[in-house]
Length: 215
Image (cartoon, rainbow, N blue to C red; front, side, top):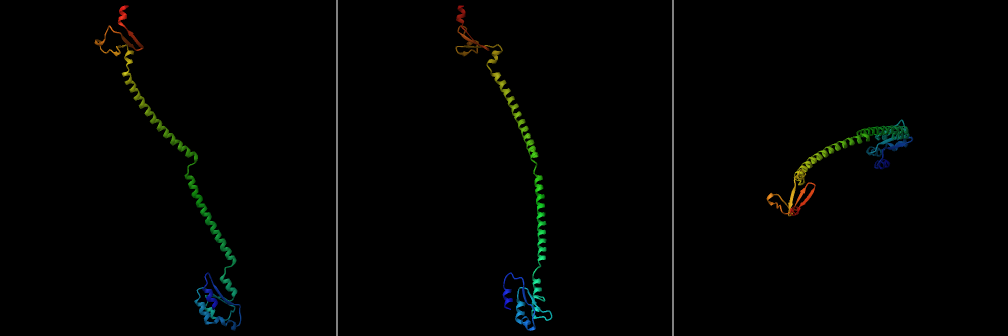
């Protein structure tokens, strides 16, 4: 009774075997006691009755969770054969292997999809080259447009400068007359008796009327 009470209070106990390897009726009397029956009934752990007798039944057989004929039979009941454990282990290994292979296949398929989604280097370089070519074409068009606009503007400025060029009339046969350091713009301001300078397109000539008279 004390053994059932102690084992029933311990953690991690799967089962309790109460047994004896046979004997006379006097030897079996302890298994017919009321205290043992009450202790077995109150025990939170399954109790296996394994008294070695096959004809008479004891109160322990009625109070226990399981009743077998011998302690050896109780050991078989409470334990799993090695072959069963090996079979279960093999089944678990096969299941784990299958699960691992399935996960690997799924990951491989996912990796293949990612690889296919990435463009090959040649295609990637060709795509960048095409894009760069398009950008260069646009820049060339913009540059040509700016150059043409500036050329037109420069041509207009050149025409304006030609109109304001004081040498241009000289190229057409006109002459600039300077006297006393100033340009003579009116006939009334010209003194025929004083020296003056004639500016042609290819140079200047000084004229002194007094010397001309002496000659």
